[in-house]
Amino acid sequence: MTETTMTATNTAAAAEVLSEVRGQVGFITLNRPRALNALSLGMVRDLMAILLAWQHDDAVLAVAIRGSNKEGPFGAFCAGGDIRFLHQAGSQGNPQLEDFFTEEYALNHLIHNYAKPYIAFMDGIVMGGGMGISQGAALRVVTERTKMAMPETAIGLFPDVGGGYFLARCPGSAGEWLALTGDTIGADAAVACNLADGCIPVDQQAPVWEALGTQQFADAQAVKAFVVARLLPKNQAVAVELAQADTYFALPTVGEIVRALEAADSDWARATVATLRKRSPLMLHVVLEQIRRARGMGLADDLRMERDMVRHCFYLRPGQSETVEGIRALAVDKDHAPKWNPARIEDVTPAMVAPFFASPWPAHSHPLAALV
Image (cartoon, rainbow, N blue to C red; front, side, top):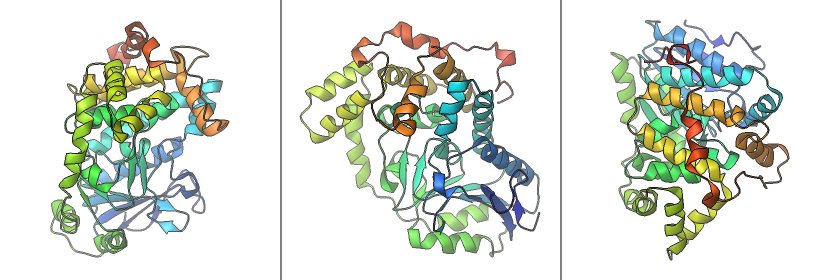
């Protein structure tokens, strides 16, 4: 493949995933800027097809991926999955809901295990599903505009797309903090949390991206090294600021975390507990269990666990899905007043949490059984 390749499932005018090979590098641009490049099922399928084709193309040494905004390339990477679709599908029993999560998680697994350097230019918003298509990269590049988060508890979901795996591998209890609160972090904190490899100035992104298509590289690792050489030095001071998360989020239960934050006398603690009180109480408990289980899992097992969990998020409690209700309140009716059930963190019991971790499939029939 040496010419611009548009996706097969979209016309050139409306393609939501653009791909081309220039020089020795395959380039992917997410092209759904009005939705902040939120992933549709079609985009997931396009990305998988492109990456599978390039994985066995000797002319492609490495892959680079970026997002686009309304003004052009960069500016926004990916805001997550298409939550309006998830609400519609979850409310109406659309079987494509099942397809979306199975295929998205398989894509996440491919990226983590990709045979060639996959370089993610994580400019602007990088949330949810955007983390899923970037955290497995051989090189994760952020900018001073990066706004990174896994905000799923705000919609009654959990940090999926491998979120258990990569958040559990943040230093200390930073993963628990980010998973439960959904707080947004910038470039320096992303690097300190092991969720990015380095920062490149916004005004250097386009020159580096273009140079990847014109340079001659000796091998795949030389492509990665070309970008690494242009990263800014790490800001060591941020790691100290993250230490406060350990004080609270290392505690054994959600109840203990909340009580400790409410007893503390700091602006950070007050803001953090106020955030937690707005999240789905049930999913806070589920998410804490998820992160702690995932700390002892490999990626494939974590993704299988998350596939079980997301099935339960929509179907475990018919007519009472926290996820459908959370998306309704945030993105559909936009009243920002979800009716969580239970309504209080203190009312969640272990018996409510445990069913989320029971697989609805026997191991040999699991949708992600083939992942290793």
